Image (cartoon, rainbow, N blue to C red; front, side, top):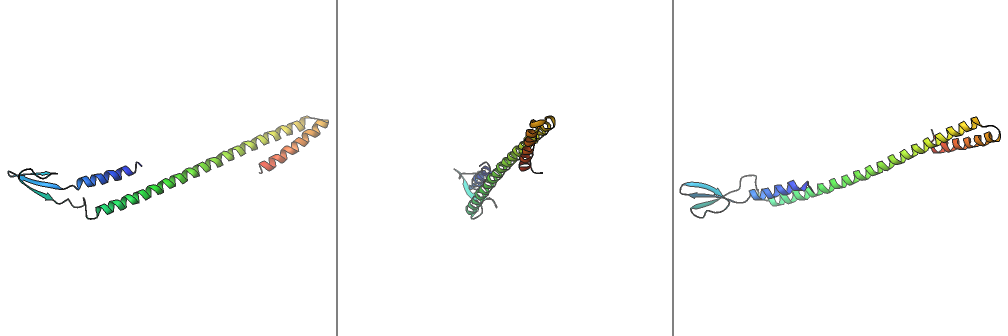
Amino acid sequence: MTRLLPLLAACLLTNALADPVYKCTQDGKTTYADRPCAQGRSAVLPPPAGIRPEGAETVATRDARTLLELEKLRAAREKEEQRSDRAYGRQARAAAAHRKQCARLQLRRQWADEDAARLTGRAKTAAQRRLQRTKAALAVECPA
């Protein structure tokens, strides 16, 4: 919306500058005003070149439409970028959660390995089984 303000100000300024200018001659002195002279002679001066050419209203209308279309396109592009940023954020969070899960599984494998090396007898057999299961879970969750 703030991008439309300069265009609106330019339109208002163009209209204000395009008002007729009156040249008043009174007692040999010449003055210029936006109203006809009360006394003396007054003449309407043509607007300066480039201020208000013929068909200026249509050009301003076309420019305003073009500006609105460009504003809509910019807003749509920003919205798409926000969606893309949110999707990227979700992917980044999912990747971080996956790395954390892999780190957790690697730690469990390390602990199971230490348990299998430390224990003896039946406890060692159970610890080796846990180690194999932990290795399998790690291989499935975190290949490579």
